[in-house]
Amino acid sequence: MGVSGAGKSTVGQALADGLSLVFVDADSLHPRSNVAKMAAGTPLDDDDRFPWLMRVGLELQRDGAAGVVVACSALKRQYRDLIRERAPHAFFVHLSAGERVLADRIAARPDHFMPASLLGSQLATLEELGDDEAGVTVDCSLPVAELMREVILALGAVEGAEEVRLL
Image (cartoon, rainbow, N blue to C red; front, side, top):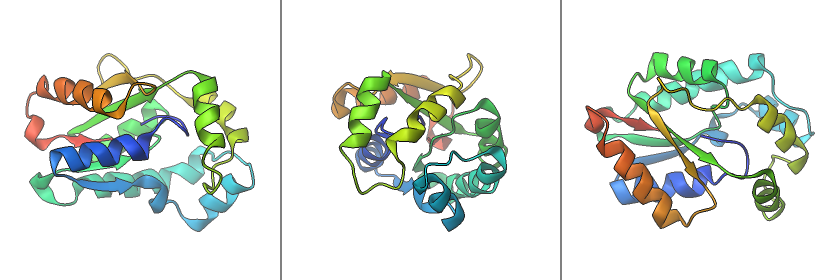
């Protein structure tokens, strides 16, 4: 989870590959209207996000005990709570970095629908993981291999880790 440019897709795919799990990029679950809105530089509101978040929760339920990693922003606590209603074993990996790092990454991917102009609104919306939420916050400016190591160590401390769904 995290804002645009945090590396959700890159790290999520690496974790899925490393743990032999299914990977889903939640960007592919957005309805066309959401993609068009973001591409036009308009931030999504809760009404835009809720149906999408329900689809994310359903993706986390798929494949039974085999497990799945979903790259998803999940910026607010209420969004994560909605996902947990469908996937109670969701474990959130918050990829965090400074605004400059994120802006540079967004600028380096010109074919993505999410413009750099929306980074500020995402950062303003972001709510850090609560102490009572299953998850870990990691510095996404670290190399992917190191990020994976931190996440796997955090997962090892989770009771029932074999049922965990990663975001």
